[in-house]
Image 1 (cartoon, rainbow, N blue to C red):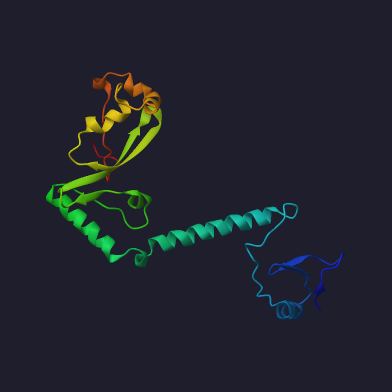
Image 2 (cartoon, rainbow, N blue to C red):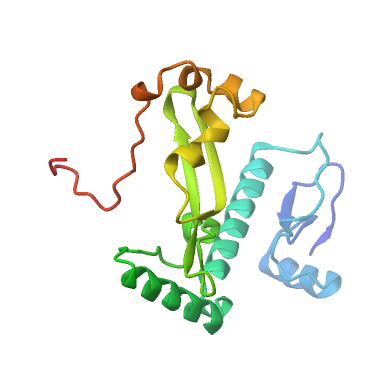
Length: 199
């Protein structure tokens, strides 16, 4: 027979309620009497004094499950409308006509979600999403809506030009601003390159 927990009764957890359970019959009675489904409530409050390593592990696994569920939902094809696919198809076609090999990542990738590159049909111009990485200063800046006719020199002026750059940015990128422009190299990352291929 199941009875509420007494001072000397053994502690067992069943469905979020502490009970002294001695047999299968007790379990069934407990579930009927208290409308318990036998599944522990993962979001139930646990005081700091009662918090154990098992509670920590349970919370960690719960957060992992939530993360997996959110990621799976973001990757699901029904979330992405046909209009988005049509825009992407048009963007690829315009790039192909301009002799640009534009490649897109599959749905769910962070880079694809962050990318804001667009094509303006009226101006017949690409507006690129750029990421500037300054490895010697461990600095990274993201630019959105950069027109395709803007030169690299103009793009970098607000960052490494000693006169026109922002003072805060200039201080952070000091190694670049004090160096002669001939010493500053601009490199573009090569995507999809085989590991052992010769540059």
